[in-house]
Length: 79
Image 1 (cartoon, rainbow, N blue to C red):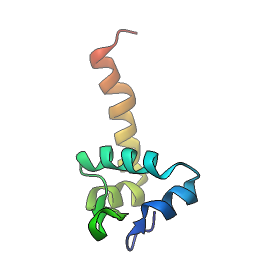
Image 2: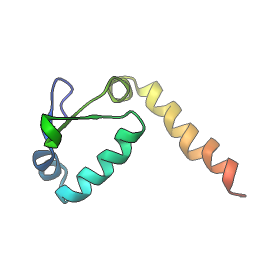
Image 3: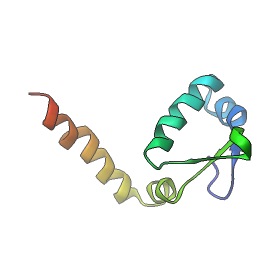
């Protein structure tokens, strides 16, 4: 996804090699958590401030990975 502007769902889906409907669904789940924003009346998507930080800052992405993969899981599942 470009950092500087929107990309259509169809172009993004083609670029990553998945179905456009699946791409929309996955991105809309992320949007519910403040990642990414829909533009152009629902035809395109772009980075939000939060997703830009995750893209630009490897430490931020590592922290999210730790929280999701280790801390979240340990709250709900016994090992």
